[in-house]
Length: 74
Image 1: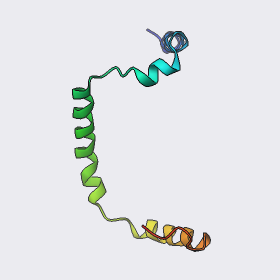
Image 2: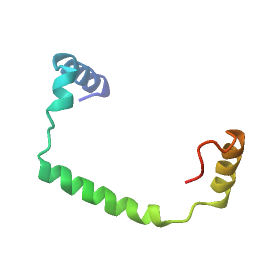
Image 3: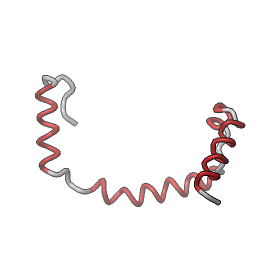
Image 4: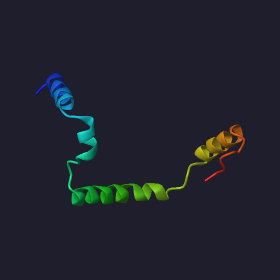
């Protein structure tokens, strides 16, 4: 199947379904959703434990100063 035909099929399937049905009718059962969530957390947990680079801290400090320190640092 070519990309163009695939795009046409995707558009046709979206046109035929209502947006409210997409929002309320999940395709995955709760067990599958939980497994995916657990795997994503495991993948990103190590990343979240990494220290914030100094350059990012400097940029955040500059933004805080520009905003007048109204929102407080986290």
